[in-house]
Image (cartoon, rainbow, N blue to C red; front, side, top):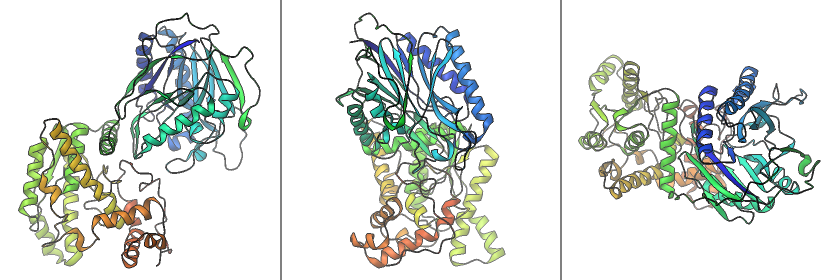
Length: 584
């Protein structure tokens, strides 16, 4: 059987940074060539970054992407890699699509290209366009209608892009019809909890359907709310794992494969889903036999809490670095939410770049002030205390507020103080709100909701406690100081805006609340279905009403890392002005 050394570059890229992404591709190709690769691949839309959103509708950006692709092909040849096929994802446009109602102007395409001999030797576009969750690809792209097959050293390699594997039909059965020896899919599939298990089973299934070895190359890094976890996978035609890349880490996965020789009379014409086989022969003859050096590997899997925590760190790090910030600012209350955000921030950008501010009022307990200082001592972050009581007294003397207005004033003073420090010193403010609070509106607009990024906005409160315990346990196992004070984890959650206040004054116990929210927010279950699952009817009605009436607050909350199948934002789009209420 012919041999082929495949190089899968599981890397990050930055949306819109065509020059920077080009340099990364060149550098990585150079590395692959030095390791003897015969075919090099990069992720979906790596040249432009992903997702480009409405940039796809700008003809200037589409043309810049096409020009950058041609320039990349020429530079690869100039550096001596002209005979090394390189597969790159980029933004293209259809040359044949006719303008019609409901189709994006300019017919942009989520495309891939084979670069060879200093030229763009072959292009193809994603056939299946996802239109669910965070994906709006029907808004941005027109589908491809070919089944690209490139012959490399006597092996026919079928090419696909991400959703082409996730949907039934299309390029997977077409690869079997084309008698491909390898199906290679380039992807930018965002992270969700437990998606790694789903992804593995998917790739196994598709390899069996395609009847050939299947390589699933994934992106890593972060883009706004989205995180990409890598976890590239190669399986043989029977679905057995040949190699699997690490999670949340860049990797050049190189492996030697024994693959079937291309069929002497390879099929042509139109096959499954109306796809037209488009063949490109780069090298007809197999390589002389060689001793395989790289037979793959299986990167260690992260446990569930490690995986989620790593996603939160990756998302924050990407947002800070890609937007040109150097440091972050956090209001430290001594509570569990700000403590976990601080720990994530220290792991993401380094404790020396994390600035914490304790802003006590007359209602702040001594243990909360002490916990904030202890967190700073444990992590090594920069710490200061600025009391808000003088500011609070000045406002109260002028306005004479009481009740909720008095409570919210404290939060808004803290938000103003944080933004003032941010403007003065150049830090980016992190909002500490969690998904439970955002769901029911348990936050103060222009107070604890201020910030440029919300690292834990898609994490329910019960998971906050679990992640904090996991992070401390992981530190102990490494012989390090646990970053989060135990009392921040063990004490009852409280906003401390009035004497003796605790969260359960206003909310159900978090395990019950989160179970209801998970059904209503994440699964879109109605009141009757939630009650039928065993929850108190009155409690369900009250909780759902809080969720529905807090939509306007969520719209004003900053972006934050998405880890669930349905995060607040692109995943869940409900009208603010809305007369429908779930009734029981």
